[in-house]
Amino acid sequence: MVELLGCYSNWAYWTKRVSSLLRATDQRPPGTIRNRVAIRKLSDEEIAELVNAYRGGATVRELGARFGVHRTTVSSHLLRKGVKVRGHSMTDSEVDQAAALYGNGLSVERIGQRLGFNGGTVWLALRNRGVQMRPASGG
Image 1 (tube, rainbow, N blue to C red):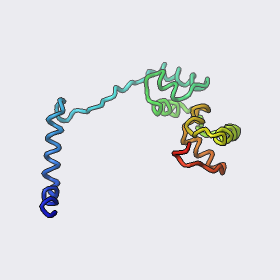
Image 2 (spheres, rainbow, N blue to C red):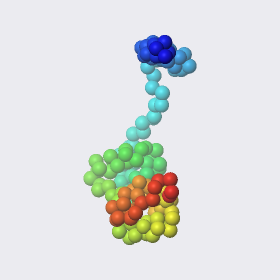
Image 3 (cartoon, rainbow, N blue to C red):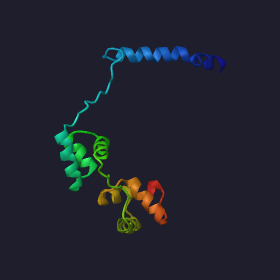
Image 4 (tube, rainbow, N blue to C red):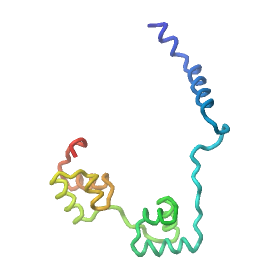
């Protein structure tokens, strides 16, 4: 047993060994970034269009896909332009509807898909309403 533990207790050796194996399989030069994402800078005209579309009812996610930027970038542009970003919480009637659907056996994920919310948002709203939640595997 002591011999076995001794073989694996030299972490510095194994760290170097694993690093060298990883370098041997990596075709990129050392120090390069693996998953570089192209950053898209929106023009002033595009930002104005983005703001108008958001005020017209488009969601942050829709605008992100439309303009080829991340949703947080859309939110940042909106905030810089003084636009109040819509909240992501559910209305009382949406929570009522979610509670009824949950009572009929639907999972929070399915309810979220149906109502346009994340499953976690639905779960939190139902829990805050006092709905007895099923175990995660039962939904």
